[in-house]
Image (cartoon, rainbow, N blue to C red):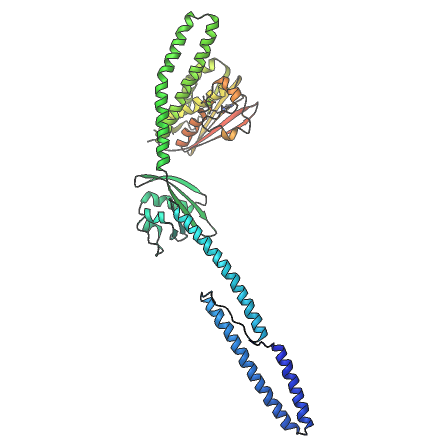
Length: 439
Ligand SMILES: Nc1ncnc2c1ncn2[C@@H]1O[C@H](COP(=O)(O)OP(=O)(O)OP(=O)(O)O)[C@@H](O)[C@H]1O
Ligand SMILES: [Mg+2]
């Protein structure tokens, strides 16, 4: 198509006008008719130019409108006014790039849809109003009241009171939260996190039946193993003690080694059984105790161990609020384990138990001036089987379960336990238990 530049056309037209003016004046025509002819020719050219520009403008406008309606295949054809043609080609280039970007986005969206669709766990998001914005196939299978086409409130779809309560709690908390729940005879891990910018709560419900089954098998295995080992170990211990009477000094040394190791194994079995029993039995039997009497009793239980060492156990309980509700048997285990540790890692010195109850909580600190714990071990000492310094502890026969048991009992009381320690100076454990009523 032949193209014309707008500027070029105007220059040619002005030059033509000047030439026409010169020719007309030279031919002796009077000024008025000359001007009239000039005016006529200018108007004609103006009309033709305006019509051409208008047509080209309309062509661009029509196409951009079609694109804005979603027809991305539209392109502006070659136009015969140079300037409009350049504008049209720029728009075409922009549309081409936009097409590429939209194509990429569509591919990503499809990939995401496939990934999320194949997740076996129910995944959904709720907006600030409580309406389900989006949910995957697993969610739709789990909750058959869900209708993808309607924006439903989550309580219209999830008709389970305890699950609804958890979701409500997730909605008010800004932290990422995880909760184990039972739903229609299965165990799920419900996790939720909020996106405050998008005003959304995203929830995931993961079936953990298999993990539970494996965990149960592991526990059953440990309980059975512990049960089977107890009888032979008790026999070894009993017979080695009986053999002491007739043993010569050399064999006596060997017998002591056998007894030490047997005791270690028996302690390990006892600890394992305690831990598993605590994990299986989530309930606690709360009773009001008298704190000074309770700790006098603890001192009595531990007195045989204290006699072997040059360590004093001091107890300092604030008498203003002596009564508090705990599970006495489980609570006793906390202090037996902690004082046992302090004794194990304190050669000579003192162990101090300080307690103070108020209407709202009970705070107890157990401190010793023993060997202390290096800072790198502190975050891990509550883990099962974690022994801070194996070389040192091996001779002391620790199995690393004592603090795991303590932590579990504290958690059963909804409490917290913290530790602070300085190597060579001593260790302090601080326990805080919120007040609760006796059952
Ligand atoms: N009072 C303490 N002083 C120094 N180190 C301690 C003290 N309490 C705990 N630890 C360190 O923390 C580790 C974990 O303690 P935990 O009571 O769990 O295990 P353990 O005493 O080694 O074995 P168990 O209690 O099962 O017989 C210990 O091995 C020890 O290194
Ligand atoms: Mg211990």
